[in-house]
Length: 402
Image (cartoon, rainbow, N blue to C red; front, side):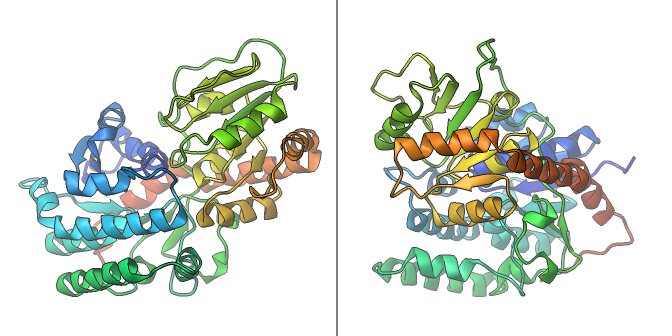
């Protein structure tokens, strides 16, 4: 067993970034390491549950990721939030450093959005900075972010974006953070995707390790039981960033009310003001893994976490992406054969119902799910990621800085 070390993990305080890395952090704790996990106080209970110490982000940082006052989360809103959060993380980097006073870490794992602050702290303390990708990874040979930026802001007033980008350039210069940021790092990079799911995998260097999603552990697990009959089960979840949308909820009711399936519908943290058919079970949130263990099909907005978790639990998907990032995930899932994708604009109850029934009955889709699940298991997940971090901490590997 490797000697106990202190590892910091700096996350973006959103469900889709915290939950997929808590199992990794929990595995490090299980091996005897001390983990300080950076996120907002909203996730304090989850951090405590895995045995890590909470590094609570200052409120000025945490509120950027809360989408306060945003009715509909668009790609523009998500992109702007990430840039503002990055800005605040550098403006408040001394506040973050103070929380490690007298107990600096031996290694920092960081979400790409926290790379600036992590670089400043890692350089100051002389410790390696390991980037963790939960979405598609990027490098100098392949970077999807500029295209996302162009598509997101096409036809938009760019005044705020230009002003924000200018402020970020000033901060990056002040703290000597590389202009291309984590794309050019020569340090260890952990991508929590199976290798074949990553576009242009051949363009990534050996420092980029594709360990698959970290699904074994306490994240996504909770108290939930199926109804106890033999009906197929459909999980409908639009993810953690999308609030309940009445028009889409009505589509689902019209599509599945008369179907002899049990339907579990999540509303993204809101309480819908309506009644539902008797075959519908409605929750603001559900423990994803506990439901997927029994699901026949998952209807989702193509969030990466839901796609990976569904495949791991042998569940094919019907995807209705709403954001540009989700469109990219849906395209990849369809290419891998594990999902069908429907366009939101032309969606009807009949199309929705037919897609769910076809996916559930399609043996080719189930075979593709089994093949991708085998790759997820082989990639190693949290255990493989922890192995690589422990190897990186070995004395023979001095830290490299961008």
